Length: 344
Image 1: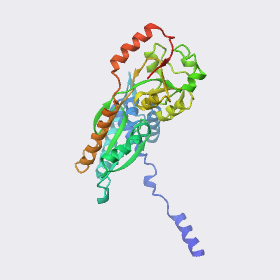
Image 2 (image 1 turned 60 degrees about the vertical axis):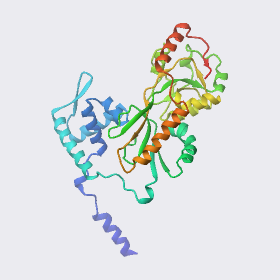
Image 3 (image 1 turned 90 degrees about the horizontal axis):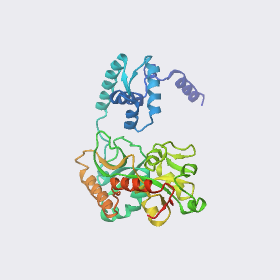
Image 4 (image 1 turned 45 degrees about the vertical axis):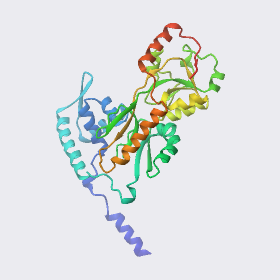
């Protein structure tokens, strides 16, 4: 026992991490720096990396503290590299390229995985659309096994594992082939119970009521469509997953800024009621994305064909946004305080 204790003591005493790696920055800092330099701005880089502007700014400040000099300076609306920043960018790109060359291969699969299709799908799309339809997929494709990886709403995993992705976003995902499935529109919706508690809902008092939304998608765009000021009220409750906001509305917690495709069934079955005949184009659109991989193309093509077929059968396409805009203008000019409830 004493001998074992001595060995443990010796390991703890003499085995220490090599000091040559202690000062290396996390690779996330290097990726953020490269994106911000290439995009000439933190906001565009944040959108590409699916993080917030403040997260990019904070990572750049961390990297600046580590290297000991400023990397960017502001020029109008752009963030441009300083001379030391330009020199660092050249080195960082070489480092990232070398790392990519060291890890070029996709995850290996054994023979038993040949019939398994790995799907990445954002959580609200999985909950509100894909999962209720999986039985139909298996009936039509009994030989395909699905491995479903759930990504947070508005977050692309980008780890190279999935064969095909079902996403809501701007479509800017380098390295993926993709097709745009449909656009989106947003509008307020709430439960019948909430209407019973607040029977006088109107555009005039809407901002005084509990409002629910995704943390990255404010109400401002819809407010402008409705002729209101774009500022979000302080009482808005935010979620990092729109499905949670929808579920909160279903239980009478407030009025959700609903995405049409995710609440369609709730409108049909009466769980939610659309408020006002005013809709705004969604911030993003729905896409299927996949990597070029000849060995996986047969499975990918079958899933892709099934998704498109399901959308067509379910009339998943949203109404013409231009027509929606014309109705909105007519609605606003008619009466801003007309009854809010809209049959859907």
